[in-house]
Length: 470
Image 1 (cartoon, rainbow, N blue to C red):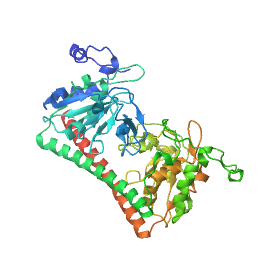
Image 2: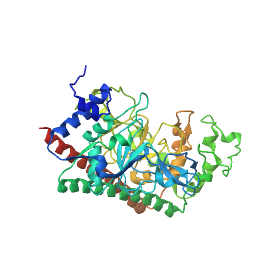
Image 3: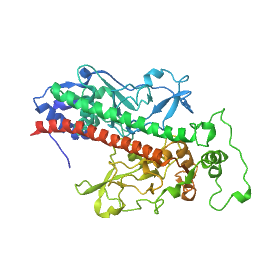
Image 4: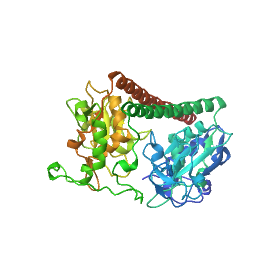
């Protein structure tokens, strides 16, 4: 049983809440540490120009950026890139400006999984976001990077999550955040932490530019244009302008592998033919003798111990900061850990257009030696195709649509690996493929360095506060 002796001042500060979890939380411990220290503290309201929800109105989704603005939910804000966002209508969204984000804001998830944070950079600029994330806009009294680092630290997190309410779905509110005590460090320390966060943001933006450019180079080399929605089949929102896909197949073209019309799509067949007429190889001929493999299954015993190992699943792996779950190492076969340069495909999921299912991921320095779930399809390339080049192709619009065309299932879908092995991979001159491979690996190293910098900034904040506790 947990208990603590409080005083009436706590109830007044907590808006007279009698909820024991509020007063027994780690947030109460953090408040006590801050109150006991001689360091200057100021409420968040004095350090911000705005703390608000953003747009709150009916959302009308459209099929492309021609008609809409990229829209992110609270889970999307955690991603490394925003290549698979939905779009909300420019014309039919009231107060669209209220939805849009600007750089150097701190975003905080306020519903469901609360207290997740993200620092907006150029890639967030002018993208729309839901009301399920609170926007915190710092003023001239504090550096935005330092404020973000404190709120992202274990101390900032405990303060924010102390104010949760709700029986089933938990929430926090801007009004609660406005009263959070923010420690004020020396200008030199604040500037140092801020600059580390800015440097991290720049690395992420530059890395995403390099990855997009790598895909563009492949398309330019083989004279392919970006795919239009009319060129592929998908399970998306209905559009009156989109023609229904109707085609016939000769009985000799149908075998026992699948009778799913989606797998026999005439649109997908056209895409494959446009690639196969060039110099190309089936995907399986670009892989080593293991072809497609997985981590396999193992007992998952969650523990909090220095001897544990982190498990990264499909939702975690696409996040810039991968939290994962900590499992008992004794049940894990360490020969199955990820190696640098592997190409991964999210192998289980649903067919929503912004879902991770069938999207490719490159195993960089962060994932080297990590444990990933058995739902991933893992690949190692052979000497014909470099791994960075293969990732660039499979993560492109062509690669993604071709992988999705192999899916089977109703609720939870999986690729049919016999179809997956035949996906065409364009083969360019060796020097060009090596250059693309080098650029892709450079970009993923930059993403890893950006993560290290962000962790460094947060660690500096936590170290400073730990000094006060001694």
